[in-house]
Length: 152
Image 1 (cartoon, rainbow, N blue to C red):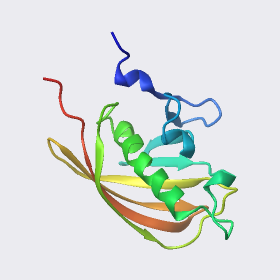
Image 2 (cartoon, rainbow, N blue to C red; image 1 turned 180 degrees about the vertical axis):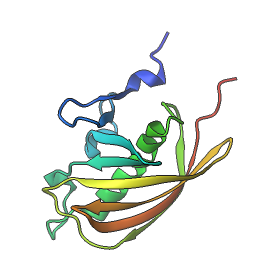
Image 3 (spheres, one colour; image 1 turned 135 degrees about the vertical axis):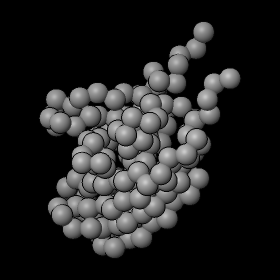
């Protein structure tokens, strides 16, 4: 018998960041590991999701590449769903995401997505949020994700 999908994820207190959970995919060789571990913290009706960029996330200007930021946001949606207590693991999918880049983000400091759950239906989560670095907004986004199908 194979491993359960839940065994592919780690969601636990991070001793290096008190009050934060470390959310990461443990199965090697998948895209999630390019972004790296991300951190999750429910906070007053929303969920904060944090990434520490690395040099391979950079562009020619020395900022975080827009594609790396969008990759982080895509993962942050599911980390936030975990933080909201809705999705623990499974074959969920991003159906749509709209992103507006407002400013650059440096590679040497964390970026945070502040994610709000607008609505949950039987199959979907409607989410939106802002990304900031050091209190400055660098992007806004809205997204629709499909929850994993229920086992039959």
